[in-house]
Amino acid sequence: MSRVRVLVGTRKGAFILTSDGGRRSWEVAGPLFGGWEIYHLKGSPADPDRLFASQSTGWFGQLVQRSDDGGATWEPVGNDFRYEGVPGTHQWYDGTPHPWEFARVWHLEPSLTDPDTLYAGVEDAALFQSVDGGVTWRELAGLRGHGSGPSWQPGAGGMCLHTIVLDPTRPERMYVAISAAGVFRTDDAGTTWQPVNRGLRSEGIPDPDAEVGHCVHRIAMHPSRPDVLFMQKHWDVMRSDDGGGTWHEISGNLPTDFGFAIDVHAHEPDTVYVVPITSDAEHFPPDGRLRVYRSRTGGHDWEPLTEGLPQRHCYVNVLRDAMSVDSLDPCGVYFGTTGGQVYASADGGDRWEPLVHDLPAVLSVEVQTLP
Amino acid sequence: MIRVVLPAHLRTLANVAGEVVVDVEGPATQQAVLDALERRYPVLRGTIRDAATQRRRAFVRFFACEEDLSHEPSDAPLPDEVRTGKEPFVVVGAMAGG
Image (cartoon, rainbow over all chains, first blue to last red; front, side):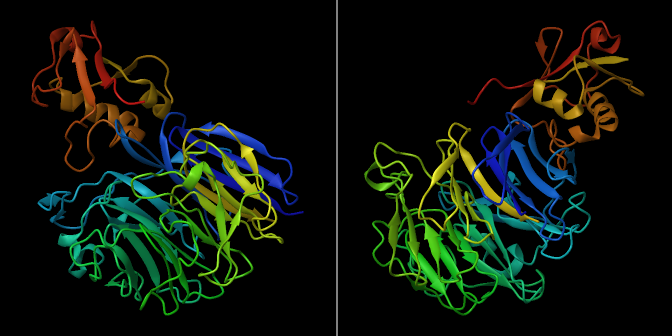
């Protein structure tokens, strides 16, 4: 019988929740790395018992931990993230030049096919690659060096490369998203990059439809249809049907189109989930009601999903990496909150229940479906 | 033989309890102690000093003999009491945060 493993990164450690395919009864392990911020942990699709975790604090910096036994034991691997060459400057919040400085790893994306290869998205925004299971890291410097790097500016959370999406049909193609620069695509495995932000419009920047400078919060892809991308931008939910070449808005009837998380149903490429958040000034759900919105039409038409979710006095946030799906049938959907709850739906979002109530603030949720 | 006191998070990382002891070749300086510490516990590389610049991380301080040595030059001799093992070299994580 299938099993599900939910990897939860929080402000004060990591937790691993496991269940059989029925998804009714959950075991909770953790905290792992207690007291450390775990921005992200994720398993290798090529070897699901190989897990990677980004462990950091403001005091003692960055570590990367690796497990080869599904999270039972861990060992620290490489933490030397050096920018290639002379790093140069990007823009600071006030528009002045600011030297590129490594702060932390926001996101780890293991290769779809090779358990030793993975990518790290870091703050200040850059992309690193390891081909030895995380022991050594090399910057894919063509991203920062493609031309617009000196004009990138941090979002409120820092200038982070937070999203890495691998194209399962074209190994040379991948996408990254940076706050607040936008989406970039490579078609040669990371050597050269181009911004792919046409159609985005952001009122908070001097040129609202600039090629670069958009605060993209998250992008998601269904593996069966890799040219279709869904995006939760700072404001606006967007869609591209041509690999980021052009974007169009699909916010439709959402109560607010601000938010962070977005994901796609495992078996229905046009079923998309977002969690609307009131505004950039109020990072909590509208009216104190935690609602996931689901579109079954690839956008525009959205329905609120509320059964089992708090519908009064709820003022948590759902961060960009804190939503994921399993690949069982029916598809399971999972998300974590800054209030420390991890909610799950075993029926595609119709009904929800909390798997845990009182973890530290949840930064990331990843789900593995295991044989 | 130099005694070093690590903060709790770094003791956990290094898988040690209580003080650790390192041997330093040549003059006993901050740099020599930290080099020896990182040789013995490679997991600590980058956690006390930035791996690229070798500068002390901003929220880490070095105390010894009731003095804050954090701003001393990294190649300055440590106090005799530290050099002889009478007093420990203390690595401190700043008391801040939640």
